[in-house]
Length: 485
Image 1 (cartoon, helix red, strand yellow):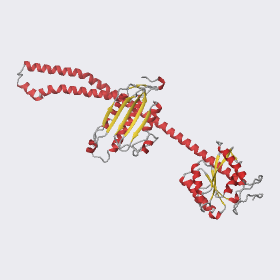
Image 2: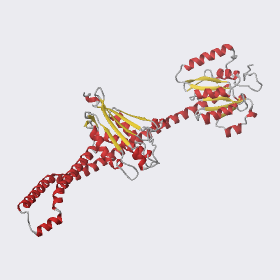
Image 3: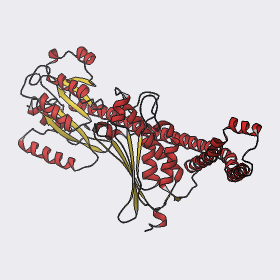
Image 4: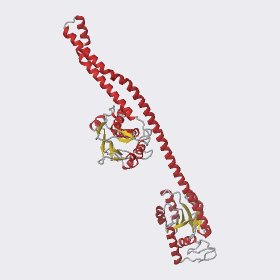
């Protein structure tokens, strides 16, 4: 019944909500009106969600009636109802953006409401929603014990919740929820800004490091190039001089077949016949060595070439070869394993418009990771076992049918990776390497270089026990210059 202060519900002691200016009876018509208003509220984009949890239907009706026209910061309430702890758990799981819950304690069990609180905080990890316990049987949930042992935000007896107090309770809960949401958004923004700052900082450090490495390698290549050019330039005249001297010795031997005991002794001492045979080979070997050093110097300059602010034409195969040369010390045989076989399936591809230094960095990251994966797969295997099933890195290049893109596929025959690792592979700071051996940034930066700087795509294909393949697809020509056929 309705008196001057309270709506009396069916259970003794369950008195709630003062109506000072409204004399509405809770009727079927009122319930229909509330449902209609609730439906309209759901169409409003800016709303607050509120869950009423109580096993008494009249409590739901009275609560909605009391707050039917309530708004906070211009936004109305959407009412959601649960009539048991089990229903409440399902409802909050579906609506994690609920602002606050009016939660009865005693429902299907004496502690059903308290179990809902534990579920929200511990299983759903939802610390944002405001939880207000209200009970008509305070003896079953002593206030001090509940406040100490459960993460609730307020505790009310049903007899306390007059209409005005219910409104002030709602205001306090919504204000707290709003502030927590604001803090959460600001924290997310700060976290994102910090991550962006860290990425930018690392990129700058990496760029500076690559620039410094490039300058160092270029300087070394230049210093090597000068003396090796001098040696290579003099080898041809030296070869000619040796040829002429050997021809003269042969002529002397023909004209003076008996040079005397002293000369014959000197000829035997120096083993003239062997000297005549081996000296041209020696000169030829020196020429081959100097040519190789000149090739190394050229490869170092190719790898370390600096990037300007615009793309230039570049031979991808030269970039791959220069990278393999830089990593040759890791590919060749050592005391633990035979050399890693490098299989090159190069197709005829055109030069592409790109930033060569950045692409070389990508090749370096991918090939170095492949070597790491192969060495990891060797653990527990003997030298002979590895030799019988050798480590292999296969590099394949191809031109697309429309001649607009080239692909570079780098595949190892290591252990491969799980689906979980594959999903995280390009993630910022993600690494499977031990502490101190990986930054978790190499592939992140590689994808950024391929996709953001060159408009291409970097993908991974891998299966446990079957190795890993990193595939690069990149345009032949930059978009602003048009695609060349």
